[in-house]
Length: 194
Ligand SMILES: [Zn+2]
Image 1: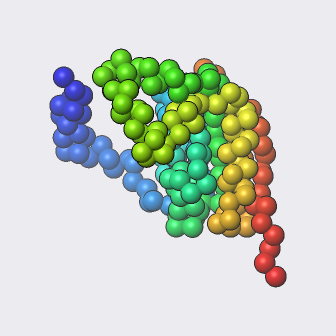
Image 2: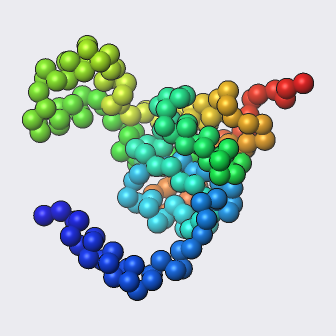
């Protein structure tokens, strides 16, 4: 039994009762914020409340660990789209204490995958044929603070980041919502073109 049936039942009433009316906004973030944070369920409502970010005010990107794996991956692309196409000029990278990606090892994920029926050969083939570095791809980070710092650096040093973009790195407590600033207002390292 999946959740789909319940969701669709709720959805029909939601639309019919015009519950959407109070959520009317535009695709442009009112506070010109683009926020990268973790998919952790404890942050779903807590983080925007703790940061005073309301519906329509920020573009929010989420993944496991609030990580930017690749300079030209989908997270960095989302940040750039938020800046160039949607008017954001302030980037917040918000990791959190007690993150599932903290200390996560690829061995743990792969052993669970094997328990669920994924064959050893499949994993070996991915590593050899497709040249995927499983170790790196499925591993988390040692320190959330370091991870946030590295992500801020990656954004700041990106060749496509426009001047005048402010990049902050923070860590939030998933119980109290308290924010600790790791990097305040790092700006584009690019020099102005003459
Ligand atoms: Zn997390």
